[in-house]
Image (tube, helix red, strand yellow):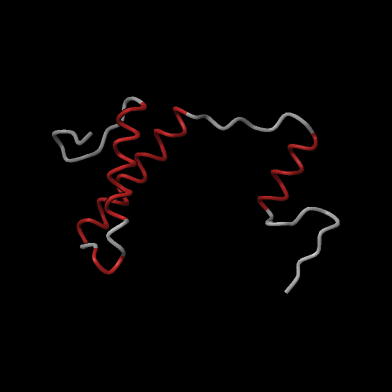
Length: 87
């Protein structure tokens, strides 16, 4: 998981799952109990996991008009038409 250079490398699903488990264990310590080094480590591992996760589980662009509209609404943080926000 950690290379000779101190950087994280993930090449398969098992390493990806192990990395996420390590991030989860550090995050369970709660923010006030995590050292600056551990916080940096979480950040580095998160970036590596995200990059690898996109390679393992690619997200494809929507192909239908409905899918395109749903994606655009999500990006714009809009609610479904006909539903009003209650306060």
